[in-house]
Image (cartoon, rainbow, N blue to C red; front, side, top):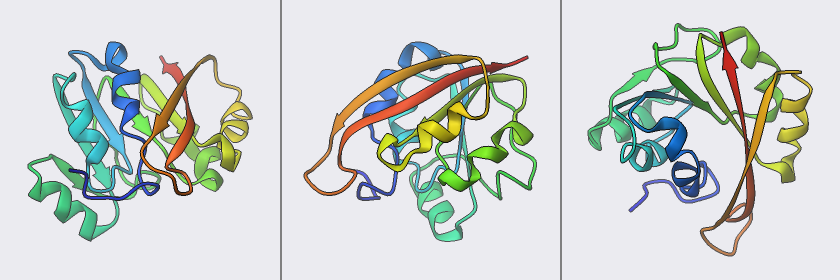
Length: 153
């Protein structure tokens, strides 16, 4: 059972959509909240670590047995990983290139909020994955999530 109610986390369908990318890899979810998506991704990864600024969410994720680092992904050192997943506030998307480490980056977006447009403005090479989801009838509980996959070399 998820700790967070949608829409305050990525849809859980994301884990299934990226399973072939993350399979057997070390994944870092940046801004992971309580770790709902990490728990789903954990089914496919070799190892998973999260980073979250909110102390209450860090405690909740740790109580679930997840490895979490408390910190700000835009100002603190982010952990090393093969794959990075991030869904951040649309106004912060422009800062993602500044934090990118070598590896595969999956940048999530809610098209209804225009986040995919902001990701496109970054000018990164990569491809989109469309993730339809249905987790309820309220705002941001169903629709299509978009994931942009890119490589930092």
